[in-house]
Length: 308
Image (spheres, helix red, strand yellow):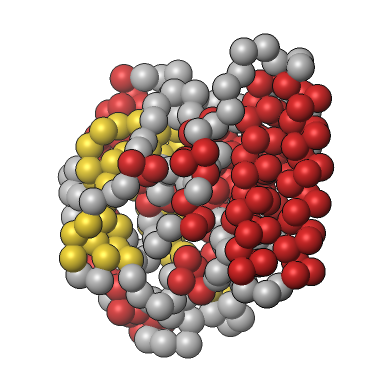
């Protein structure tokens, strides 16, 4: 049985979910072992891989490995890693990403200099199909109270976050009912309650374009974001202003989904989102009277579902 007791001397727990990612997992692991900061543990949750991942892990005896025989999804895998973690701070690393060698050191230093900080994230380098690409303006990063900026899309990469383990005890873990956008859901819960510091250094390398990415697997990703927004709207700790922002996002995303389904001839789904958009529009208007001077989220920030 795994020892899940927190250690006062262990600073960071690094959690890596992996499903049939032997082709890139070794590179991810070596980027962790190449860190200048050394006081960490690495937890790999093998989510039912049928490739050579179990064989690969024999090359890393220092890694704590949990393996499931069946595939349970990235949320369940990360949650298992959180359960096993013994560090004071939690970091995630996607198996197809890499860390720059001073990633952990920079974040640990930041957290120690800013003891009030509960979570911080970093800038990133993007590689798509082997070519470096520049993020668009919609991917701009923010610091502090970033809840409003988290509503259009996920601006925090899981591989870039460092958070105190106690934060996850307060906000809950990843939602296993979400097939995608599970990180978006968690960051909404995080940012709605706590400031999140941004460190403007490119300390992670994100790779994309491969077929097994969730963003490639699922169309209409705003379906999952609507689910997450509906969840957060029901939280009693949201301020009137935060509620208006969430309702604005729901109106925009349901309208986008209505248009998308209509264009594909899926009229039943289109009708559902058309009605949902109207419902949230009425709720927004009522809430808007309670929150003076609130400007809606810029529409261009919410149209990302129609891009690419």
